[in-house]
Length: 349
Image (tube, rainbow, N blue to C red; front, top):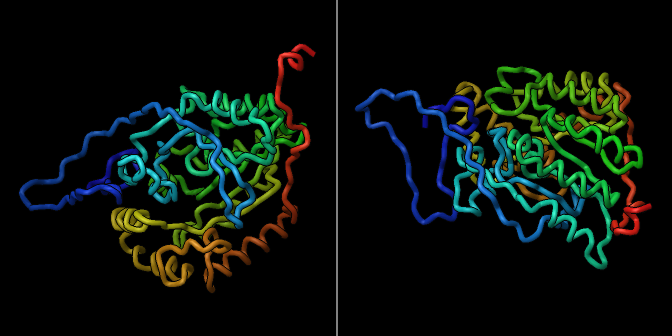
């Protein structure tokens, strides 16, 4: 499939649950025309619940919220792409153009937090799709969710690659004063050309660094995530990204090695064929070396960072860079003891 300007995926394969498969091929009869732009469609999704629970032993949270399904940022490497198959859509172009918004997110959250016996623990906001993707400007679901969490004095950790998060500094700063929030900003690369190819509608890398500075200046703790690290493509930037982020006030740093679950293997391979054909086999070889010879290994404990010599080297570089740059060794823990269910009586005090 020819590249579509402003979109990340170079293919739109059918979902793995679909009974019919289609494949495009060049029959040689016509030149490949410039494809028309694909407009973003946003559909309402009447969610029945908002908080998703997990029992994964290798992540620091057991509950999360994603106000949107699909993500317009169009990051070709996004590990959430295969989830679009559950709604009968492609993990390719559909994932970044056919989006769903949970219009009742704030009301659902209030109901779930008010449930008898609810026990507070940090909610991760934006673990699958970015809560500050472009459609958030109009729908403001993330803002509404944060306002509910602030009223309940509930801890929240945010993951985003958008500087739109700075719009909500007023709410975030109030939460931060009580150790109820921290924000993780994902910086994949500082190369604007590479960024535009990998994550075409995500903010420019400098905008993300600027967001780290603004959040930090407002007293909001920020983690920088170098993610994903792609062998032979952006791995040489690790130390530079950590250094820039630290200078702007980041207090934590982590990384994620490229993950290729399900259809993502073929999608990323196709993307390399379009943009970096000379590196395609070398990159995929290194990925497989770090995944036990497979494109992806979902084993707990290693799925985020991989195993083997290459993965060990990346871990060592991260550890040494954090130490040299003065990143704290321990991560900030958010408070849960301030949680309360608002009542009319409390609102009058």
